[in-house]
Each structure stands twice: as structure tokens, then as C-alpha cells.
Length: 478
Image 1 (cartoon, rainbow, N blue to C red):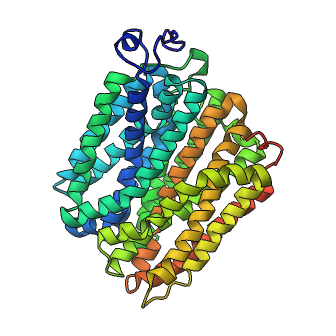
Image 2: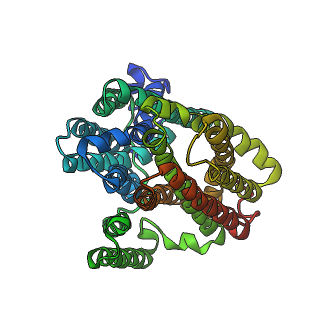
Image 3: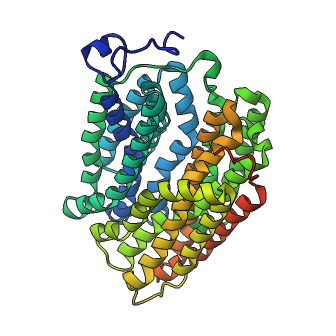
């Protein structure tokens, strides 16, 4: 409780006097949190271009490729809420540093993995570490900065994350081509260790006030984690094995566990990690559906596109990373302007609807990719650019609208729930890619074009959710 309301700092810039007074070194705090939180994006982007090389080394089929991605996304999506709550209870700095230790050890295990099961363990530990680092990094910034400096710090944190996401596919592809995929994991370790060293020196320990702490809902986390594991295993196994008794039993078990999770959350009320009363708001429900549909479409694309470029079109990992570079660049450069200035003029509901429709138009352009003689400038870049413009229109307004729809009391947990939904959306999308990877073995490019129709349909569902369910007055404050 003593750390919930820290004493004023004599020097907010840091230095020995400030450290002795229990105050953060603001520059060091920002460096540590930017590095730590960016690692989750960096590893995901590198894996997308390293996936074929990893698949080849371990001799895994399409299901192996899906598990390489989902072994990380599953614990991240299931535990990100409990990671933030643990920081509130046990100390944000402590949980942040522990997450970096777990993440670094997991990268080492992936780099030296001598078998596919060992790689899966490493990827799962990476997800656990990221679930501890990602939610606590922003809370650490909120504690270490005040007033206008806090807004500037959060803007720097977001911009640096976007820049890291943009550079990661290209740099990761270069490492994969020159040194091999194992070195891509090894290259992340010094950054993680440096973030840990800076955090230990610069970040002040903090906890939420007792009345403001998110609940430690271990039962809910266990149920949703086990339920998602069973469902994802069934979805991945279905295209290859068919509707066998084992697959159907796993799917049914997953449904039962998710239902049990919902029952537990309902019974716990405000003590649940996902208070179901949030979904009593049509606006919050609409924004949650928009997030689910939109990030399912996006998650599938970001895994499948580089895979197709490398496997079917003969790109190297570096070239594949460069090919998808326009997406994060456009997203990073335009999201602030489009999401701020344009939203103020046309309103949140309209910009979310139009942005989702633009994403759908990008996917419709992808449906025109020919099975042969693919030209990047004609067939890939225009679709990728339109899709990135649509996402740039959605990202910032969506975040603000989620906070406004939940009110001040639930704004923190609402943001966490929305973040978890986006992670789970990518998890489900990757699980469903087996339909393309197995069913289109003769021409992945043709399968990719067919899958783009599903992306367009999901984007249309996102637009419909925004237009039908989001109340303009509820999100006007955003």
C-alpha cells in the first residue's frame, strides 16, 4: 500500500538524489519499457518470415507451422490480463523484470532447441514472459510520468513500438538469410537483457491502490487457457485428421471449458478478470466484435502473406520482410493523423466503419492475385497499401472508443480485455490457416487469394458491428 501513492520526486529526470528518494529515472524508464514491450512485436514479426526455415529444419507439416505461431499466442492471449493484475498486486517493476527474465530464457531455449517439442516449450515460455511484460510496461510509464510529460512518454512509447514492428521483418529476414533462424532468437536476447539492466537501475516500484487493483482471477485464467488450448488443437487438427472422435472431443471439451469460464466470470462479478457487465454496453460489445473480426483477418494475413511469398514465389526471408514493410510504415505514419484529425471531424463510429471497409477493399484486391506470374508492384503492393490505410483509420479511434465506452471505473480492464481479444483473434486465425496450407498444397498463391475472401467478409462484419452497435454519443468523449 505504501507504493500506491509515492512521495513527490525532487528531480523527475533521475540522478542519484532522485533514485535515493525512490523516484524513477524517466529516461531510463522510457528506454526499459519501450525495449521490453517492443520485444513481443519484434519476435512475432521475425517468426512470420522465419517460419518456412523453421518448418524445414524440424520437418513439420502445415500443423507444425501453425503451432510455431500459436504456441506463443496462446499463453499471451490467455494470460495478458492476469499479467497486468499481478503487477497491480505484487509490484509492476517486479513483474516486468520477471517477465523479461522468462522471455530471455525462452529465447535462449528457442535458439538452441534440439527438437520440435523443445521449441514449443520455448515459444510458450516466450508468450508467458510477454504476457507479464506487455501490460506492466504502460502502467510503469503512467507511474513514472505526470501531466503533459506522461502524454509525451506514451506517444514516444507507441511510436517506438510501431518503428520496431516496421523494422523487425526486414532485419529478422536478413538474419535468417545470413545466419539462420536460430540467430534471430539470439539477436533478441541482448535487447531483453539490456532492458532488464536499465529497469533495475531506473524504474521505481509501484502498485495500484488496494481499491484500484485488478483481481487475480487464477481460476478464470486457467479455464480460458485450457479451453483455448483444446479449441485451437481441434481447429488445427481438423483439416489434416478430419472429424475424428479425438478432434471432436477436444472441440467439445474446449467449448465446455470456455462456458465454465463465462460462468465463473459471471459469478465473480467485479472480482472477475473479465467483468461480464462490460458487455452489457452495446457499444463495448460492438467494439469487441469489431476487434475480433478485424484482427482475425489481419492476423491471418500477416502469417500467410510472407509464407506464400517464400514458399510459392521464391522470395528469400529478407525480400519477404521488405515486401510487407509498407504495411507497418503506413500504419505507423498515418494512424495518429487519421485517427486524430479525421476522427474529430467525422466521428468515431464513421471512421471505424469506413476504416473496416477499407481493410475489406484491400482484401478484395488480394482476391485478384493470380495463381501464376505474380507481380509485386501490381498484385501485392496496392492491396497491402489500401489495407494498411484502413487499419491506420481504425487503430487509434478503437482504443479511445473502448476506454470511453467502459467509463472511468472500468477503463483499465476494458483496455486489457480488448487487447486480449485482439491476441485471441490472431490465435484463431492462425489455427484456421490449415485449410489453406493443407487444402492448397499445389498452389499456395491460389489458396491465399481464396482466403482473402474470408478476410473481406470478416472486415465487412467489423464494419457492420461498428455501424449497428456503436453509439456515437457514448464514444463522443473519445
